[in-house]
Image (cartoon, rainbow, N blue to C red; front, top):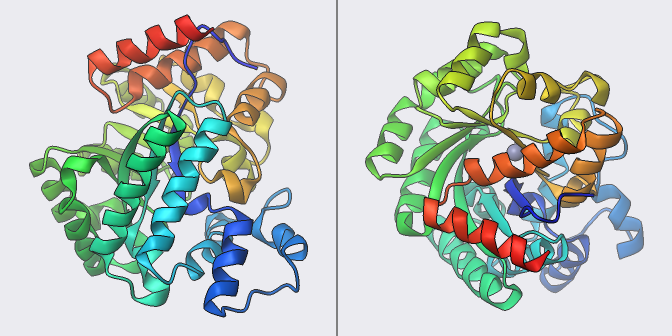
Length: 334
Ligand SMILES: [Zn+2]
């Protein structure tokens, strides 16, 4: 599946897109929330994407079940904690988990700061219990507007020392990067890294704006970069990395077929790119499936697959010392 001399990382993984169906079911039963099925077995197929959907926004509605049952901050703790167990079971050596406190809080009017505090605690405890190194990325959910994103950012920055980066996700075409310049000025003032979902549901201009206006050093998905040679050259020369999510890009209709995925072109252009899951529970996949798709559907060589694994280490929001430690640990375990 992978080069066992190299560590396995997942840098683009939404913890609120990875809520176990059994957990959703239990929390719904406890709180008397009606789900559209009579049993867990009947509910599970409704929580996952079958083959693909028409667009990103339709894909995102599948995530709504998970957050609809979060009625207390401790539910957010549980989701975060279980995500660490899932990361261990997926064989990950290091994971960057991202979450939107507004999205997790909105259905039952939870305090966003309480959500962030609970997620931070769940990751800390889970990281210790399941022995997987993790870092957290806070998401601003652009779908809910500029003002909500500012409140969301304030809640996240209250715990800024527990985060490594801030991301912008959701309705990319409806809420372009230029609307969020004030937000990301604050992010940089807080000393956090910037990664932006771009070039997924909108064009190459959205990636340019994320880099030039919001100072992103990593781009989530970035598929549309393939249509702009100047942009690809700029990204390669300025070390702007791409977090690629093959299965997600197919399921959201961002690429017509996996054979059309631009990953191989990004590698050829010298862009630092790595493989990631995005929303593993909703997609019904794990990180190993991403590598299998790259090998079997995109026909990547073993050398290219190893490069993807190594790129993930280079791209991680970690100090040089921690990167070295993760590389050494993987070699010793293999
Ligand atoms: Zn994503």
